[in-house]
Image (cartoon, rainbow, N blue to C red):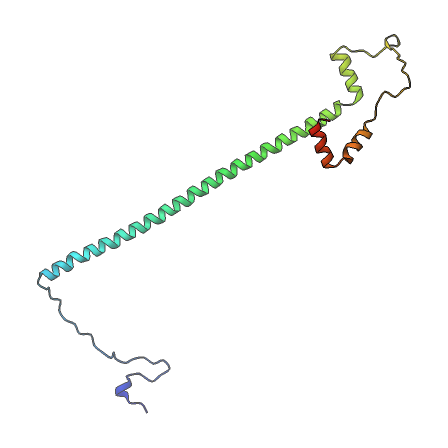
Length: 169
């Protein structure tokens, strides 16, 4: 069996200590006399505390500045997105108007509309039989074919073309 002096546990379903292993030593608080060493320690502790506070403030400022930069960047992105969307809507409106104008132009380009516009706006009239003049032409071909000359120029070699340019032919 276990020795009760060394284990100090109660044997049940849940072990727990019957008494603590050590007893804290309680000493009355004594005020130490101030010396130069204590004064230096007192001056160092507020400086350390001040440095830690400055670090905390610097970190908070950096976090605030980074959040400010991120929000400014997001606002610029939103502005450019809104401008892009407004330009897209303007483009759609202009394309719609362009398509309507094209349809109107195609509708007005038929021959009956053109004849009506010529009569109303320009005061033009259709020809009468008295205004028609008939011309009789000979059935002779007045067009000269240049196909033979083109073929002859293409058949010349580069040396012959060089000589022609030197001689001025």
